[in-house]
Length: 352
Image (cartoon, rainbow, N blue to C red; front, side, top):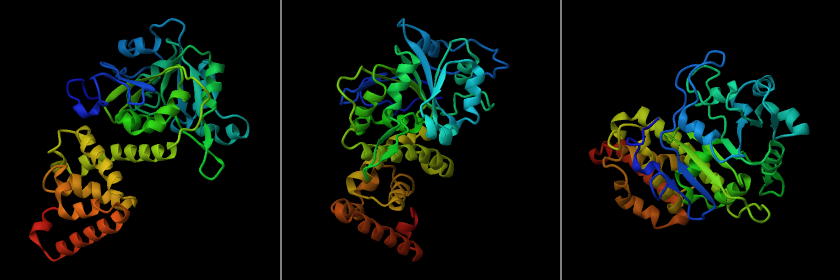
């Protein structure tokens, strides 16, 4: 995990270091300084005490708060059986036929006890099956609601209206979407509005491992009925794109160590140029996935000068000037580069 002093500045959401609220003011976001998991393995529930920062965030003041985990059974085999054996109160967010069919890949809400083995294992990093900190199972929550009330609240959002008039599952507990949101909260106004209803009155804590930080999100009690915010579908698509981009940073750093070294010593330093490149893709009007991937490769990795120097290329300026035909123009640009490289033109061969 990146230390507070080592993290690139762009890793924090815009605003004051350590805490911020997105422009919508819907959900407050805080990076938790000094948060670190138990780093040594546990044997039959024994081992070091819970880490101080995480323990305080999860079980400290205010009085009257309950602590929960929202866990994805699809990411942890035999989760229902594990929870049944734990003795902790728990309940699947799916019911009836949906639970019968999808229970092994469904979200489960479990009330945590400070001294339970499940709690200790959730806060333990490592590769052993019981060490769950890095498994991206879902967020931890604090709420003054008892489990049945919180279960009822969260269940409302497992299915949302889809574009064809039906309903679609909304996996609001996925760490990848939460990471994308906290990395650029101002880019997701509809998602922020929905989170304010999903987690109303609760604090959410999760390990944003690809950002190298532990984040807390606090949603004030919601006023008025929950509605599907306009633009949510676009926000979710953007969040998926951002989440894939965070994985892309790791792939680039591994596959192109020399080219990525100019941005910093590890993949986290690629997040800022890749975020900005994603915004350029949206602004330019590129919609085809393979062209978006090609742009990231050319502009951030293969171009001789680091991002954003590529934006000054005349051929890219032509793409940028005509968003309605951006895909066609950029496809022509890529074809020209291939042709020129095949002909051995030195000026292009160096970066194609």
